[in-house]
Length: 520
Image (cartoon, rainbow, N blue to C red; front, side, top):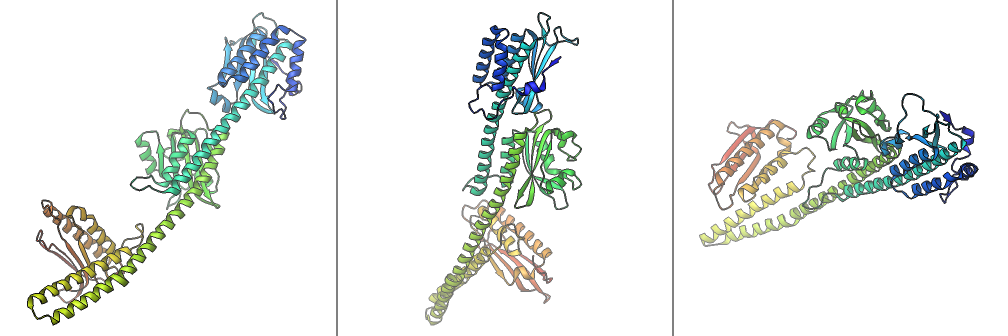
């Protein structure tokens, strides 16, 4: 095989300062040298160069270059072999003509590097002259010019591809930030914030699976959100699996370093139970303000193309932006929750300071009127109105307590659990049960007794609901929890009563001695 002379070929390299995209000066020199030889081949060469520059299909353009190289040099075979990163996007090497066999081809061969601005893309080679002659200097100059043109085409295609990818990833990161900060719309079901990151990352990386991993309480990392085009069984297995703390991958992620692998299934660093499904993979730290929140895993199936340098860089930037978006979304939700709690506190204060005081004053006036009334029927009616006011005041106090409960993720006290049981039965009963608390319920009832009470209440409400299922009108239920009760043996205790004033179901009473617990 006849190779180019490196110093001589360097003189044919593309000048970085050539903004117009014209042929480099040193390539022009090669054309001049061709003019001194078989000038008849020059028009065909220029025609091929113009066609390549105007063809938007890169593989077709490079195939035409290989065909032209074989035609102009009289070679039986021409091949354009690229580095794996560029070859992945083109589906492998580009060839023209019959491939040479095991024996050295008649007339030898030529091989010239394809490079631009010092970056090597691959090689352009021709082999086996049809007339059996050796390749000459004119052939070498022809192949050099075509190799330079191939380098220019590849460089431009790579820049255009990188620009398109960068635009996609930037738009994707912006859409994730917008989705996380917007929160769920009214009446819609919005996926978890981490699922948004996993799904968008998978789409942008054109991967089979995207997953978000967070630190596990016992060390290592676990999958908390996943988006995959593989079977549901794989996703289920991923949720059950955990990357143990001894994994080198975990150490790299905690150090804020990305992990890249061309074949995750055979990578010795991976000891994850689901790595066997994947080939090319990226694990990118979700890092914000120097703190690693977790990792974003983007995986392609075995045999799929590897992630390019551009894809790795853009995915790393996306993960950093997603981490910032997650932090901002958490703060945004915290502010919204705080605003809700402040509003509930204001409503509770208004109910206590205004409504209850007015109802209490009205009850006092009615009580005075009852004592002054001379007609028994009037006294009885006023007394009934006073009782109704007392019941209303108690229900408002219960509402105030429910407004003052903590966030849903906080450990629920006995009051909260009783109110939740009552609320859950509202739809079936047609009316919300009345709930009355007496005494410091959360402070005096221990955990075990609290669980028993809630279980008894749930069974009682289920029985009432079954009995009232055939009734067209709403069913009234009165629930009372008393922690100041005195049991028949004289011990202090707590008492639950569930009564249906309409007589739909028999009353339920449950009692237990107090154990002096600190909370339920």
